[in-house]
Length: 120
Image 1 (cartoon, rainbow, N blue to C red):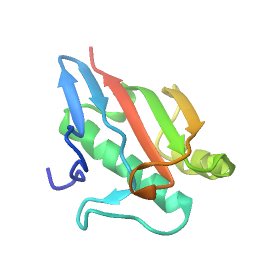
Image 2: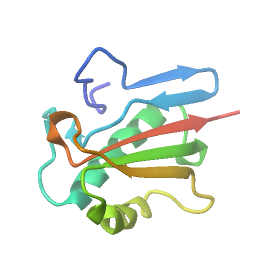
Image 3: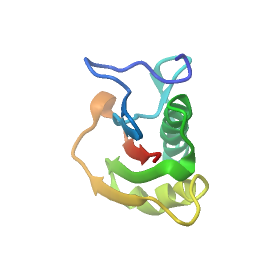
Image 4: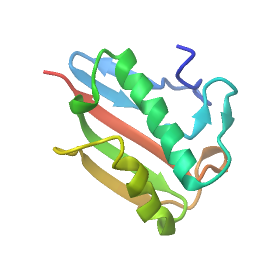
C-alpha cells in the first residue's frame, strides 16, 4: 500500500480482526518520500490524519467507524492548532479522544496519532 507510510520498525501500520481496526501511531510521514513533513504543526497534523484515513479506507471502513483517537504531542501549546485541523476531519458524533504531551517521538516528530475503528 504505497499510500500508507512504511513502518519504521518491526510492526504493522494496522491490524484488523473482524470488525475491529487498530492502527499504529502515524507520524507526519509523506508516503511518497518516506520523510517527515516539515513546516507548521497544522501541516503535520494533516499528514498524520491523511495517513490514518488511508488506513481506514484500506481496511474497508469509513470515518464514521472511528471510535477512538489518541494524539501524542511534543508541545501542548499546539493543542488549539491541532483541534482546528482535527475538526476538518470529524463531525458529530465525534470519536472519543485522548491527547497527551510526550517528551519525545520517533524521528523527533512533533505529533503522532493512532486510532481504533469498529464496523459491526
